[in-house]
Length: 306
Image (cartoon, rainbow, N blue to C red; front, side, top):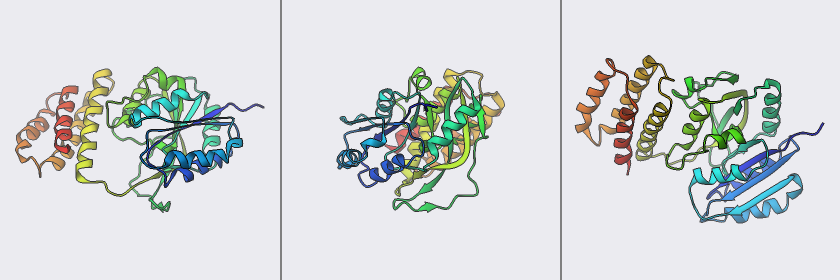
């Protein structure tokens, strides 16, 4: 039986230290029919040169290789370009500092065939976390997981918790392109894209650890404020585009939880925001928050983080 071609897309940037490990994990896949698309986003280090040398020595592993270097456009634009350049129906998107376990592609392709869900658009697995030296970090007991198997309403849990780890995913290329890909205007391009996909397509989970996400040090308070602000703005966009999809009771509870996180982040720098925070928190018990309410608090956090 001829197996379908599967694409691996790597938007690479400033990961000369890790790119060879990343590529070696792709070459080690037990699934035989692979193509590789790697586009370097104008890295200031020698990421592209290291990748080129490695792939020159492993060209026989792939049915097709696309290796390019472009001027820097950011992770979203580069990810979109990588996926557009792929020719496989399913694309495994992989960060240039992350790595895969050998069965990752094979297990996902087997799940896709087993489930036989026509509108399946994204499959993800569980991941572990590795540090800068490649050591696996202990799994926290608080780690959550999405339900196993395909889910036609994954937005129900995605809206509350992003349980999709990026190096674990496989995307159906035509569905990804149909929703417009990643939004380059948003700092959280991944959760925005997963939410948009989940509103139109099924998302499935394979409950096995099949990829490693590399976590780097240096997560500053300012960066955490920026990320929280990006969540507010992302949720605003989703609510605006999908009115009524999230029940009012859930939306109120969700908004209150994020408001408390907002206050914990901002009170040390802008205590004058207390009346705004308190008024919004109290008001959420009497009316359902709108997209504009989320956006307002997100913009405050993003401005404070600059």
